[in-house]
Every structure is written in structure tokens, then in C-alpha cells.
Image 1 (cartoon, rainbow, N blue to C red):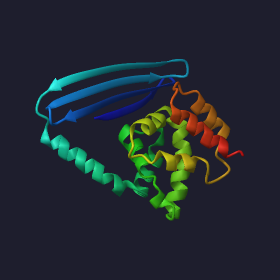
Image 2 (image 1 turned 180 degrees about the vertical axis):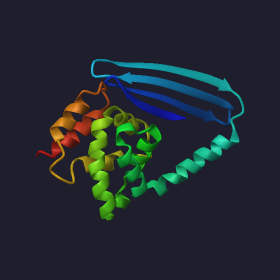
Image 3 (image 1 turned 135 degrees about the vertical axis):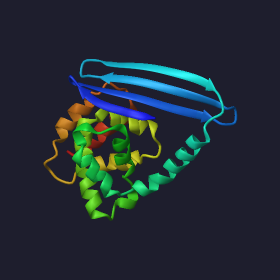
Image 4 (image 1 turned 180 degrees about the horizontal axis):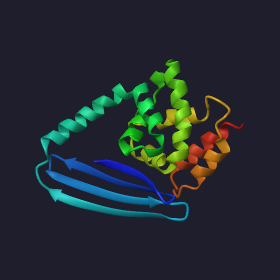
Length: 189
């Protein structure tokens, strides 16, 4: 269950699998998505399977535990270390956990705030399409807070124009793509 990201021949390939459970009607909908994104073209293949069966109770318990763990990820510097050490080859889960660490409750944590801000700009350069997807599809991610962070880089060495150019090349008409670019452009004002 999730996304696996790889970088091959100048392309970003992401594979997603999501499962939606309607326990009242005992229906499971499985959704598969393969996205190949390169500078020249973007291909998406989607498959949905509707299955009538009794959902596995373990999956419900697992999802409930996952939603309760979101709060424990806030301001988590261990996640930042993992992202820093593997930033060129992050899997979907680690990338997702990274975005879940952001929140207003971290403002007074200087170590976390500085490090997460610097990593945010690095990750935006490496995985711009995935960030847009996460912002669009996961309401647990505090995207408004992250957009605000993008307006306040921790130091002047971050190449904002380069990042704007990278994000602009992402083939998406998403509102979040526009908002990310707008946040970055606020820096130069």
C-alpha cells in the first residue's frame, strides 16, 4: 500500500496502490496508478478494481494506528535524519513521513525548524511532482504551513529561481503547483 519512487533515465516513475474500504456494504475498491513523469511527457495508467468481500479487520486496526501516529511524527528529527541520509533515493513512506513532521507546534523547536526548512528546499528540487501529489491527496499534511515555510528559507544559499524552474516543468495543472510557485516568488519581494 503506497508509492514507490525511482529515478531512471531522467524520468520519475511512481507506482501507487490505494485501498478504500466500505465496511458497511463489505466492498473493497483497489486503485492502482502508474505515473511516468519526464521533462518531455507524463504518462499515467490507472486501474480500479471493485471487490465485494468482507474487509480484513487487521487493515482497519492498522489504518487507525497509522492515523494516531501522525501526531508522533510532528517535529521528529529522526525522520529528518533519515531523509537527509537518503534524499536522492527516498521511498514514498519516508517522503510522506517527512511532510507529516511539519506543523505549527514545531515553531519553537529551533533544531527541527532550521533543519526541516533546509531539507524542504532540497526535497522540492528532487521530488516536485510527488510533493504536489501529497499536497493534493493527504489532508493530514499541513500544506498551508509548508507553503508558509517556503516563503522563509533559512539561508540565502538556496537557489530559489532554480527551484521555481524545476516546479514549473512539472506537468500538472494543480492549484498546489501554482501555490508552491507563488510561495517561492514571495521570497524575492
